[in-house]
Amino acid sequence: MKIAIYPGSFDPITKGHLDILKTAAGIFDKVIIAVAKNSEKHGFLPIETRVELIKKSVEELDNVEVDSFDGLTINYANKKGATVLIRGLRAVSDFEYEMQLSQANSALDPDVKTVFLTTKPKYNFISSSTIREIFINAGDISKFVPEPVFEYLSKEYKVQQ
Ligand code: ADP
Image 1 (tube, rainbow, N blue to C red):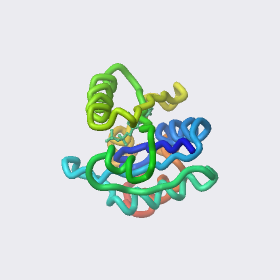
Image 2: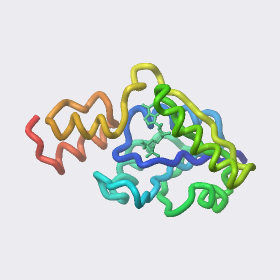
Image 3: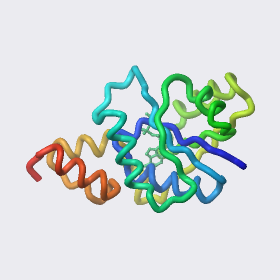
């Protein structure tokens, strides 16, 4: 059984993330999408909320599990019996960081391989930070995030649309 981890901040999950996840779910037996509790990043939504929103957004994907984790991604992958890490690439600007990250992970555990995926072009520019920026400035984010995220943000944060 080939298990892959898709780690990230998912603050919040976007249609770009979902597209990557669906592709990965079609390739691997099981994909665990896991929210990293990254101490260096100041979050927008609490970890539990991000996990809940992902769960609601992936209901129709049978071989996808949703989780969160502390510490090194490699240790989490080993704990889960995963041999693949999924990361997404948008533009050249992602490349240097993602390359460094995958090489660091590979140095820590050469048996865990990073697989890079891309989205459909229409989702390519979407990032959680862009979504947050549009949302807090009262722009329409409905095209860029899964329905549960849109509903949650519209309800919880009374931004004048
Ligand atoms: P992190 O803080 O770990 O970068 P993110 O939630 O921002 O977490 O992203 C998780 C992964 O998904 C990263 O590899 C990122 O490059 C990728 N990703 C995010 N949005 C897109 C997108 N629109 N297209 C392709 N990959 C994406």
